[in-house]
Length: 447
Ligand code: DLL
Image 1 (cartoon, rainbow, N blue to C red):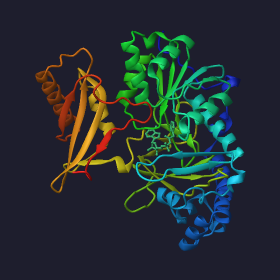
Image 2: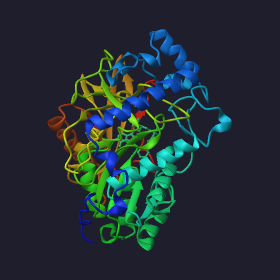
Image 3: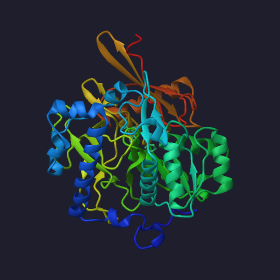
Image 4: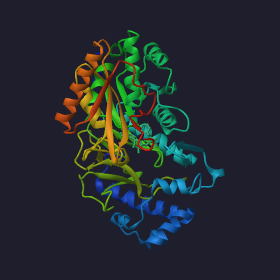
């Protein structure tokens, strides 16, 4: 099948989901925001001892908020604040009044726990439905949902959003990749929801099985939950004959559905400003940055009942863009998130995100877009090496692998400007992702 015909989000009544609020004037939006912000600050202050203490310490109370700009006087909330109040201490709703709990597993220790009331779940489904419409999903579509179901917010978040929109969902979850290929082929879903790394894994297994994904009806890929590159988007577009769009979200704020790319521009994700406030701050000075400057994304929830989050520091690095979008939506956009500030590696003084390496690898001939980064200590210095894989069908004697590694090293040096040790492996030697890809193996504390 050809690349899906481009549908616009214009006049079809079935797809005008929340269109009014999404195309509202900035001043209209600000009116909604200030009213909701007051409500959210009050809810936090009155019901969550943690917020009462942190506001009191900063000498602010919700009634001090006269304009949206006054938000900057309120203290930040950090991931550690959630951990310190594990499991339910930061909730504004008693556990008996909750409708659902999710959790995101940290790399160490206890998970971060988040809770929802029935109203929260309802708004989440709405926002996910809006996000899907932006990405080109339409009522009646069959949605193959390969995001993990369980404590992870991805699977259920996308599930209820798609149902809300009037789609039928195939709740296959992650894993069982050959079966994923079979069902994509037999059921003919128009929409694939997954992490980009898992979508790539599915495509590889399909190739091995001799299934031509580009010939199937799948026309849109709704991808997110991990950093990926523009180059990976082009690869996925081509392998599936689809338009792949980027969606962003995080458990602490809600899950998926916080921001979504439109398939019209595919140039940054609209942030749903009627439910959240977005700021970008300098992570060093903690000062808000002017529009368009790159820094750490900070989010405040405006309508969350069970777990209001005030000025939550996401650690995600991006920039806001308030230029009008050709899709007609007035909500601002964030640019693709290249990584979290704690993912940033410093290789011989150069700041580097794993997704930048991905962007280079996708362009090197004979190299597959699978990679892993190893970090260890060499004396007092951090050392980094990159493991890549040669593409299937390439010659794979030792000399060939060395030559491939040298080609990759050269590309990285000339494009990113860092010298990085590279090891090329044979096809399949780097573990494949079934959800969020693990790109960095950090052995610095073990050596
Ligand atoms: O990953 C929610 C989600 C599910 C978003 C499905 C999109 C699709 P967490 O597990 O709490 O929630 O992880 C949140 O993942 O702070 C980012 O660092 C990263 N992340 C999420 N989406 C993107 C994206 C879900 N599109 C953390 N690009 C966030 C880059 C992303 N990073």
